[in-house]
Image (cartoon, rainbow, N blue to C red; front, side, top):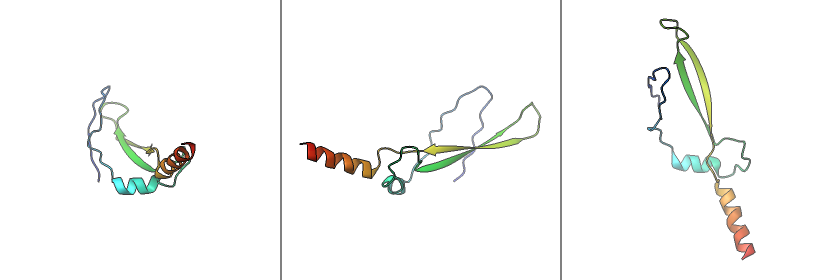
Length: 85
């Protein structure tokens, strides 16, 4: 799903209407242990003008998303806690 939002120069905007697919996100991160590997990647497409009235320029910015902790990490923590008690 694509959404477009115009942002004026020098202003800040918070994206509030992003929703996740909970089950697929949990499944994607369940076996990933390395903290530097993202669970998913969102691509932010930015269209900008270098000067007023100038040509449109586009740039894509990858946003790496990492949910934590994963299901495997939670299971290991649970087992470790049981062993210590």
